[in-house]
Length: 336
Image 1 (cartoon, rainbow, N blue to C red):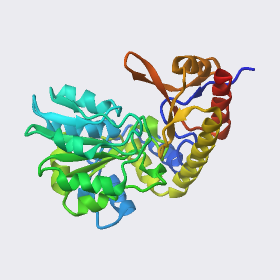
Image 2: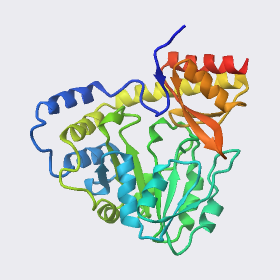
Image 3: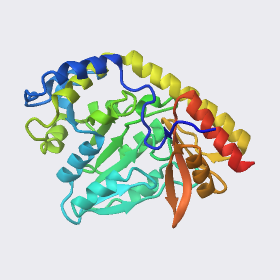
């Protein structure tokens, strides 16, 4: 029996964007002959209102995706020979943006069994050339969360001037203990939060992300933005998305139901996985390359995660219930 292709490789929102976003996109499409606003003040004002907690528009800077925010950070932070700390396996854009600045990547791998960050080893890796520490939370590709107490303990010991990048693009899906990173920013810490409209808001194709930080850090890291740096459609869509948190709640509920389903079924099949708080799950089948081929044969595209010279794990985005069932059915055939 053939199925329609199911792309579960890029952690997209299976519900798509909010109806409010679609209306905003259609409205702005009629005016694309006009330049957008010179800056993103309307979006930043909407973000400040959405997050509240005494944050102002000056605490935000936006870009064309979270990846562009990470590029801004690297351009502002690194001179050739400076260092940034990452904890592999993690989001590859950290390494790419560091390489563009001729910065040195210092890897402090996650615990291979639990995929948790090792705060002591991160701190031991800091040198006078360290500029940024990247904490992907929940982790990508693991989905594992660094708990609030561990995050605070790390911040308490990071030397002044070393900025912690809290990449939280999957934060909306978290049901576990999670850091209140905004509280750390309001307390004056050297922290930059990275958020995205691609995941919970279902706007991956519009490319919109933002950072949150102390206003002085916003001025430092956001200074590479160009005039008209965001399209009118992206800005209008971002503002509209913030008005429909009900759509995000539906997305999160669907995702958490899918996570629970996959956990139960993976346990039944005896397939190892990491407890995810994101909209994907990382699995380690006994024969990962064969499992990848079986999924592909059933029209299911997932993301292979490389180990030493080979595919070691598979990252599977959580989709609609029918898609999740197809994943389990394909994996069951491979383990039979």
